[in-house]
Length: 159
Image (cartoon, rainbow, N blue to C red; front, side):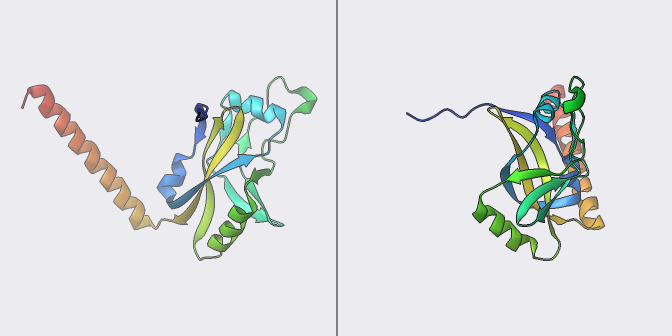
């Protein structure tokens, strides 16, 4: 009998990453957290905006991830900007080291979510967009928006 996958609850998403980077591959990583950090995440008090991933001594860490201190945490609270270790298999880490050695690539956290009772992070292997790429994607989104608006207006008129 197949095991049923637990419901995934999204905590936070890094929308700015999709604006600033081309996301080529995504990976799912566990994240090592303290108890008060998890409680703060359950309240949705996290900011992924300026975070990025970096290798230190063969291990992958996420830097700049801001998890606000838990209100009832007293002396057991954590530093909001501490480095958090990402948990991946050794073969995935080796592959990522090789991919990051290419010019212009970086690892960026895309989203944070609960998978069952564990906190997971989706990280993306990204290549930076140039200014003209950003303008092109904005123009494409505006064109799609205007086309859907026209279709909706025509449907309401009965055409």
